[in-house]
Image (cartoon, rainbow, N blue to C red; front, side, top):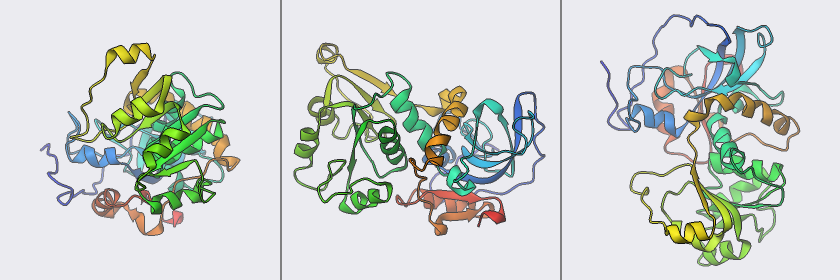
Length: 329
């Protein structure tokens, strides 16, 4: 029977035995070594997405090794993503993946690390480079800079020679970004703490910004749009929670200022995933890009998936990953 869990506490995911996928042309059979848990995975089993039904295998991000498929892929360590919301996903020992959606896992990244980053990396990459690609020297204001998408966007922007400025909600989160080479000075201009009374004046003084990455929904929308975004700039939204989704836009000002509004939905960009993972390989192997934090206590076995799903919604300093191969530990 199809059903959706009514609350986070009610989630009870069961491990079942299913046949190993039979691959079709241009697909790879991947032995999953680790699989990440994203907010969208949790939202899928809680019924936040239309047509997302159970029973099915959830999960989007993975890392593993190709056991069968096109010869050029067999035996390679890989990472990637599947939609995992409207169809079976990656929280399984074996998955079938289009070869075009795979990337070769960077040599210095473990499966646990690789599985923690797929959706955040793709979201950040699409926001910065899909349309009107980010240029060297451009300024980017990034909300939620300590979150997974925000951290990826901060690093990608810096990697490509742009000037990222991140917004965070507390001094603790501001200090967290030091692990990634940001906020390196006492009054570093690359991270702004929103708990300070003068944060808006500070954000405005560092601008204007050529683009703004918004994960706050309509919170501070007018300030970000009217006081921070430059004329001809892009306002890009990648998240908007219930109750934070409605805005009012002055169309006269929008076209006079030549503003662009866009949204990022990674599920509809599957054809680009493999290219993105391959594109980022060099950045990680050169250590210009750093993997997201995965604390040991937030690595769960597949049989602990229900606890892992609940944990992923209650922490913000570590990613949550399912370990499907004992050797990963």
